[in-house]
Image (cartoon, rainbow over all chains, first blue to last red; front, side, top):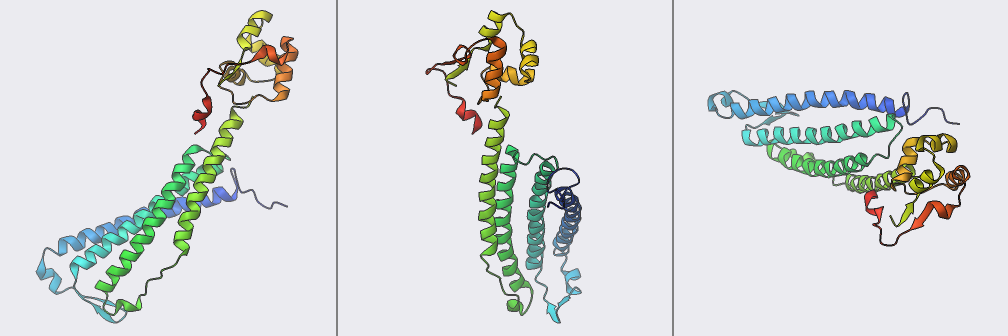
Length: 179
Length: 77
């Protein structure tokens, strides 16, 4: 017995679409905040007097004033958030087609490919973040990199899904042109 | 598409409009236009039977094969 519909209006898809909409707005706010932080850090770095009085603590360790690294870290974080934003925005559009009950639209193929590429980019940015955190945070070796195969497996799954959607779109087109 | 639908010729022979045929067969005018203009990918036997019934003809009168006509398979890529 089907308890709840997965496609169409008022379905699980529409619920997920609402959640994605909220996440999308939150991500824009997050990117704005981190971007402002990066910009502020960049501007502060031009004034050595201000830097002298600025220190931060991280888990009891003093965060040394390596401004170039901190700026690079903030920029990398904003890139990471932008990557997530790309994924969420494409997912929103895909879920809009699911809500409409018509998932096999040709545009969904390219959207899934973009998601796959963004997932791969995010994983690479995560490695960069880990490298930068080692530079910025003293004793940062405790923040070990999690070299997992799962993200790369997900990337491949998304690319395969894109091809499944391409086949679905082809069949849909054939069905439309069958009289 | 090497397969061609001779719907225009049959409609002219029977002095029937596309709208009238669409009503009789139970297919939308839009779909019948797709068929008439050769954009259709496939025809259901039920549609073909209804067309033959209303136009009083055989499937061979409606469908012809021209090996030199272009293939529309690329449209779906």
